[in-house]
Image (cartoon, rainbow, N blue to C red):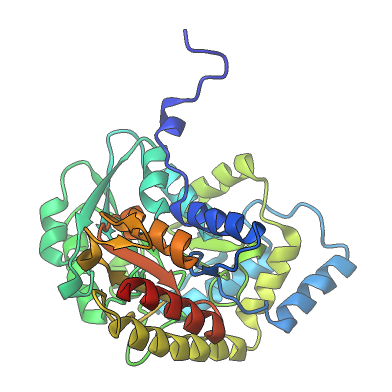
Length: 399
């Protein structure tokens, strides 16, 4: 008989979030009085726009601080449905929208209602650290497919077709991608969609960075590519990244009605409802002036150019150009076997340890994203921090 407080098998196999762990180590050093150039968390460094905060304050003043429907307030669900009706070119109804406690919670809901023991979920690597762990929590098995930097870290139709088995339940797509910043072109997505439609597979499309794309890149909603995909796709997004609202914890999913109904039941038992005040703030974000998004995107674009230029000038570093999100994902393999700051580097984790302990620059190891030999750097930091932090990194690498 197991001990009364024994940890369940599924919980025991879940790894803690590597991004949060890296940020916590950086915070420990900061608490010791050390200035750390922290590029770990995927969190915009901007304040939440004023009109969104004012909407939250107005909600409090009106007493809108009680339980809401488990799936979210009707006004927000309608606004999201209207947005996706325009985006997808087919009618999206409010009952297809479930508002949750952040996009991560939405992903958990989707995986929980669609997957179980014996199922497989295809995940292209590099992938966001939580994907594989959330899949494991359902009892399903993550089927990780390695992509190549030479291909922009993008899954190919041939890879997908070869990976699909009778047990395959879902394909998880993320475009723009965390950690690589890769953005699939419409033609690349159509080629993947052709495989999906030819097989009995559904798609979970994580589009949380949809508004943060640069240059000629264009974020395309996967379900918009073919009307037949609407019944095969669950789209996840939210307000955290585009509106600097990470702490407000509002995300959503858009899915076929039966899937949405199952997620609503699940969420009613898990969390009752998302935060009422945050929902009114999110409503202001979705329907309000979008100038704030354009301004943040322009600043991220400026930082992106600076970071790419600096990284490409450093010895033993190579990086592909991120077309979206706010990350630089760069190779540090050429430094394996070196001693940096008195520490032997033999993998991405030891590289990040050397960077943090010796240069006081914090990154996240690529191994956490299923891509050993790489490091993720968030450029959601002001230019002074970026410049000084990269100066310290370059000094470390040049010895």
